[in-house]
Image 1 (cartoon, rainbow, N blue to C red):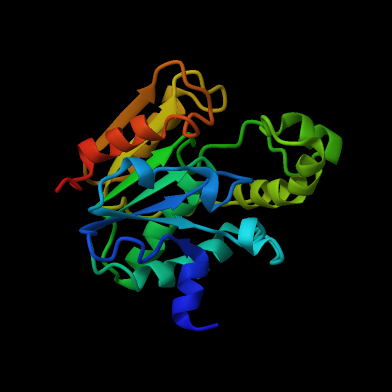
Image 2: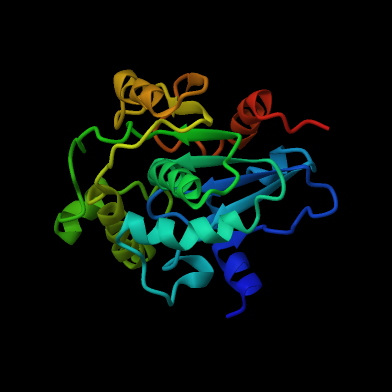
Length: 245
């Protein structure tokens, strides 16, 4: 696979707004989700090129084995993103995606690459805090009972279960390593009714930036608030991320 083909396999939407883009937003979806999970591009100006991470094992990469190591995901992603930092850019990561986005930014720093102007990290406790209820070792029936597969056909749920288990393994076997805070500003987001994370766990991200920090809660919203709230999320991002024009 050529370098260009590899990049477009991992980064859906890359080059989609090459004639109008002044900024890029790299999007990192949640556990069990693929690049089509969110519709942010439709609510962002043409000056923002939205590139959504497509990890192996889902959607058009269904035939590939899903990753179970966050380090492996970051090792693959960081060089690809490093090759596309010609424009100012930011990261948005939801839940599992927030951890991958954060560690990818740290890997880019180690590579000496231009860093994101800002990280938007959603619905995930700060690194180093313990998992509340690890799920990746649960039997299938119990794992399925905890899954957020609203509106998904039961047979499809069974097919998605190994992917969900792989993604949970990736998150729950992650070990945080202490490093200097990132020089990127952080905006931490969550639904106010998200029972998987609380304000203290969200506020813990503050120690991971030497720049500014913001915490934004969407009133009355659950853990997967992103689906159906893309417009509000895009507005929140563009208020902070200087992508107007």
